[in-house]
Every structure is written in C-alpha cells, then in structure tokens.
Length: 258
Image (cartoon, rainbow, N blue to C red):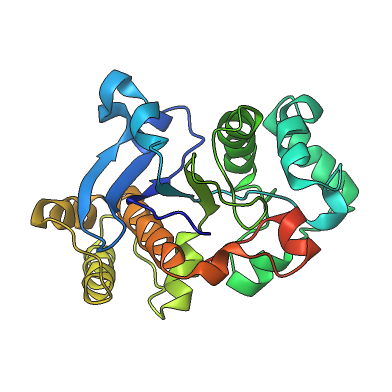
C-alpha cells in the first residue's frame, strides 16, 4: 500500500561553500500543489535545513543530485549499502571523481536513467561531481544509515517515514517541452523564468504572487529549480507506478522518476 503524502518538498541542492544561500526549498501540499514556503536554507530556523519539517512523516522530498552511479561502478551491488558505504570509500570529492574517471578510462558514463531523462551531465562530470559527492555523503548516507527515509524505487515505501526521490530540473523541463536557457540577469533569462513559471502554473503549480516574483527575480535560478523539483515530486506522488522498480538496474543505479 502506498502511504498518502501530506506534502511535497523540492530541494535545489548546492555543494558550494555558501550552500546555505545556494540550497533552496519549495514546500507544498500534495493533493493540490499549493506552495506554502519558498526559501533558501540559510533563512530556515537555525540557519540550516529544519530536520523536523524536512523529514515530516508523509512527505515526499525531491533532491536534484544523482542518487547513484552506473551499474558497473556500484559496489556492493545493493543500492542502500552502496550509499551508506560511499563516504568511507570516497573520503573527498576529488578522489571520488578520480576513481570514477579511472574506472571509465576517462570517459563520462551515464546511468540508464540519465540517458532516458536526458540529463545534461553524468554523475561525476566536472560541473556535477561535488554535488553528487555532497548529496550522497551529507544527505543520503546519514538518512539511510538511520533508517529515516524510504527511497523508491530502490527501496520500498514505508508508512512511518518520508520518502526521497531524485529529480533533475533540466530533465523535467525537457519532458514538459519547456527547456530553455533561464539563468542570468539579462532580460531574455528573466522572461524565460516567467514563461516557465506560467506553464507550470497552468499544469497545477499554485504559487503565491510573492513566490513568483522571487523566482523570476532570482538570477541564479535556484528558487525556480526548487519549484521545479517540487512540481516533479508532486507528479511522482500522483502516480503509484513510479514507486515500482522495473528491474535490477532501477534498484541499483537509482532513477529519475519525473
């Protein structure tokens, strides 16, 4: 039985030194995607992610970093153990990327879900590897080690804990036919952010006017990316088939569900 989700939370993750300003959260109701909060992590209580809110029972949380690696890189061949052991096997981001490049003989190998979802980069690409490392090490490994979350379709849903899913704003926009350049201060980027939000609103997103103004005005695109992650998580929550793995590749590599 699939537990009902009270809320969906979209997280635009960041591995930068100023991650408190770079990580944004969009929190909305799961039945209708009415956004309740749109904020950077530094403005949450205590200056970080509020664990009580983020791990609310009945929440579906979408994070925009890779949840896994290609099957040929995954050791052991069990996703949960792979994530929990990841920090010990890769003590820092640089050694993580070096190991992946060695295994791939310098090539950039994508997971099946990356190819299907048309993600811009593989998990250890120069522009993404720090985000992958910090996401696996600082977010998923502690949560899975404490049995604090479910992570479909790699693990089964549970009534007593929230669920986390992998999202990718670029992939979601491509799926919706909305993919375009939208980051920057120049007028075309501002107009692109406004157009994307307008289309997402027509598809069910219900943001407050102040949230629209904030997302359109945020040149880095982080606020909009959090809203896109919340929208993707909402779509996942509405379709039970998303939580069922198709095969062992889904269970091992992880999967972008929308």
